[in-house]
Amino acid sequence: MDWKLVGTTFLAVFVAELGDKTQLATLSFASSGQSRLSVFIGSALALVATSAIAVMVGEALSRVVPPLLLQRIAGVAFLVIGGWVLWSTTRA
Image (cartoon, rainbow, N blue to C red; front, side, top):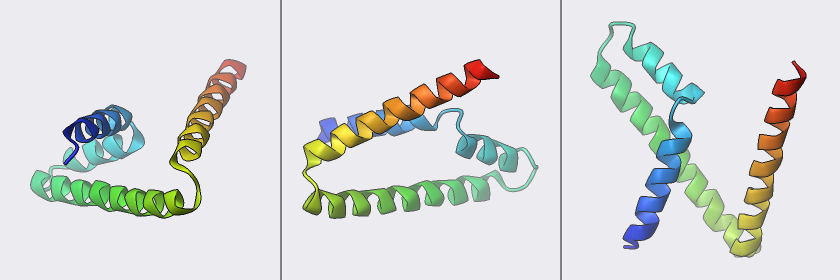
């Protein structure tokens, strides 16, 4: 087990999920007065399911596309999306 990779992945996903629409939806469900345990289990299972899909797709892609190229494509995509978000918010 690569604990450094576990920690890096945890930190990246944790920071990325803070304050996003998924967390806000979970907060909304929890504040409805219903069972918080049910909300926790549902949201945790959803995150596990989406993470499993990402891992499987990433593994399949790495068989066809070199991992370094995938990292570069992801980096460029993040920069483009970030630039687009900044540009679109300054126009409003």
